[in-house]
Length: 410
Image (cartoon, rainbow, N blue to C red; front, side, top):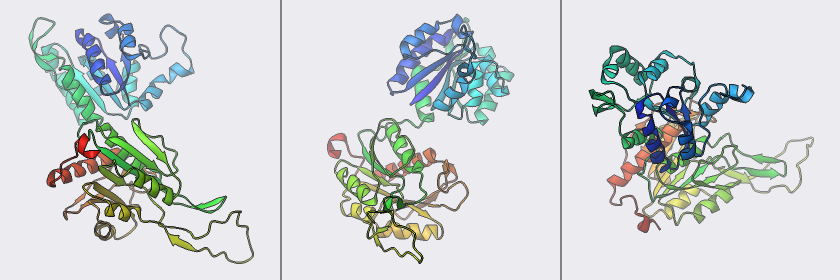
């Protein structure tokens, strides 16, 4: 995972080096962006040596002539990061962010990114308490920017009060929380299925469905961010596997079935988010089926029900199923929860706006084996994934079997 760290012009700029080291402990790749004023306090070479990455100091290439690559570099960085962190954040940069000023790389990056933004102010106490700064902070907070309040104490200017850059650990924890990186699934083995399966009719045609795999990939990403060892059994999809996730590509329902069972012994949690084909052709023709004058009749047989097979081998594992429905969503989810002996069923109406196939968002309801139900509002699939993981933790805490330790899980 990659973050951009914006360093602005204040005496606390040197503390950004400590923050880099702390975030690197979380296996984060860090791209430093410095304002012109920041370079008066610390040299870019320091950050380049710490990160092994180019330090961005100019909007259009700096000393070298501007070109097409430098002209859109801020867009490339904006799209490639998982979070934007500004530490220290001066009153000046806070004001620019609040009012949409884009006059250098960092301010332009802020406007261009959709990643979480974490801002750690550092300044003179009077500047921090000024009405303009307080209003700007309020504006950014209302827009969803994560603010790490400054500490109180002796300031570089000789005054005492609020304005000191928050401690490295406080900033790091705010970054990790905003990115969904936690350690509550550490030492856990999670198997996730994702995407569609394909059942061949002949060498050029197959039966499949519209699943993009995005929900399953978001679940594997969220679990890995929270410290789990993740095996992702994926049907055909164009998505890239999240970092620190072992991906096992499969094509058919039978291959997915075998792959899940092969990894079951090590699993403590299994999340069946794939849209597995319920039927396959009885006979797959060895050559292309050619057009004829009359109708074509094909015979299908049911595929193995992976969720049912898992329930027979469940033990203390948490078993989660997904139900993509077009009608009677709650009724179908409750029936599936009972018939397949799952702990959770996550159901959604794929005809609802913002919840269907290939969307970046989802609208789901969670049905638990204890009879409780929870409807979630529309949110990103990564947010949904974290909520599902939260439900798993609640089930573990409510049961007699806490999350398995590394020795118990293996």
